[in-house]
Amino acid sequence: MNRRDQPIGVFDSGIGGLTVVSALRELLPNERIQYLGDTARVPYGGKSAATVERYSLEITCMLLEQNCKAIVVACNTASALALTMLERTIAVPVVGVIRPGAEAAVAATRNRHIGVIGTRATIRSGAYERAIRALDSAVQVSARACPLFVPLIEEGWLEGEITDRVVRQYLQPLVEDGIDTLVLGCTHYPLLRNAIGKFLGNSVRLVDSAENCARAVSHLLRQENLQANPGTKGELAVALTDPPDVFLEVARNALRLEMGEVVLRPLVPSK
Ligand code: DGL
Image 1 (spheres, rainbow, N blue to C red):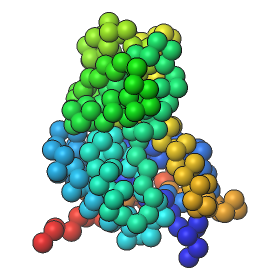
Image 2 (cartoon, rainbow, N blue to C red):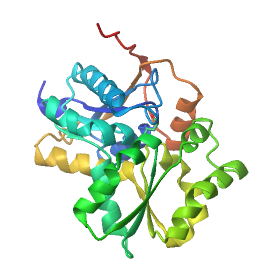
Image 3 (cartoon, rainbow, N blue to C red):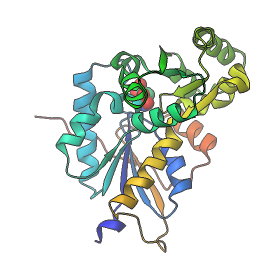
Image 4 (cartoon, rainbow, N blue to C red):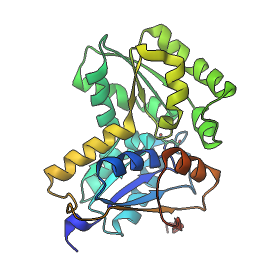
């Protein structure tokens, strides 16, 4: 098969990476996408760097077995902790969500004070601060882990009184710090965009790592001459390492994604 016709492999710790897939489908409708969600081991957000690296490599190898021409790490935690290792280890191009998000945030801020929210592991890693400061060392970063957002989203509580209170509890200190831009540094968080936008109002711009990652993938495919032929009908195949739960329906409905039957690809125990 011509390399350009091979699929793009996209992975996340679970289902949240479908926000990146949705952005990819919109921007690159001719591409075939093979999505693999590690639902057997989600969440990655509270795990150690060594564990997230190991999981990320195992999932990437499963995608490479399907001849993927590029790998998209559609998980902020895996991008923060495992991207460098993946770039060094595998033979196809890899795109993560952190650098594109940092670039968009630096382009968006006016007062050079950016907020970043994500899982504990992402925030602890300091990956966003490093990426932002590498682009503009004068930018101030206020970072905050929001560990309750993922379970709220997975429960489908995308709006409502409880969600509003949790949003306020986590984001009020960032507003008081004076941020004018907020990076949604977790693949689940675009699903909370309405609730977050309602709390922050128009004075804080939201940077969605999903959309910016899709733009970075598009750029990479052009650069490497790997774009699918324009006549190709793109499609999405979704596989999970454990059978789906209610969150698949939440994400599918919120993102209006068309996908065939979800396939189960159990992890093979390492020797
Ligand atoms: N996908 C993860 C991220 O973007 C969130 C869920 C998890 O903790 O695994 O950081």
